[in-house]
Length: 131
Image (cartoon, rainbow, N blue to C red; front, side):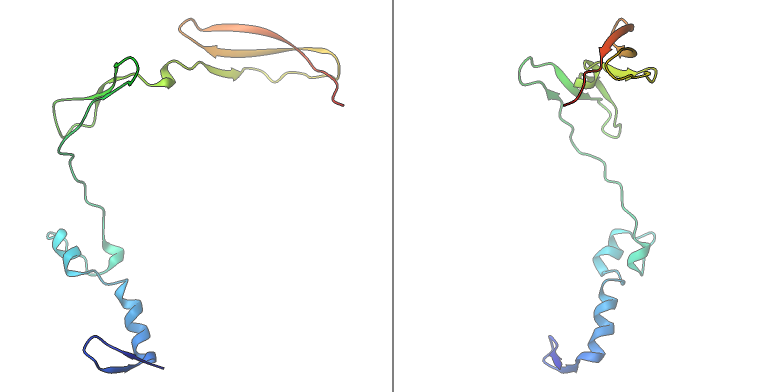
């Protein structure tokens, strides 16, 4: 099998195969010019380039119009002044101890709920029969 190149020359497929593999490993001229201080020859030497944001918008809640995030005045800073996200209001629930569960007997479970008033609760769990 033969392939026709962009110049109109017929090239044997065996000769073209190593060249096609090389296309993905060698950087293009544009990629080299984007990193003038380094100019990587291989694609494995490319590194992501940091780009500063030119504009930041503050996000507001659609219902109550509170600021969800408000950027600082410094455009290179990534900090936000106000963060009213749902994680701040959803309580965190963790089981503090592994209960000793017995079939059809009451067991005690200690759980920790994170609220503005950190409170511990004892919950009486009744294990019911399955079936």
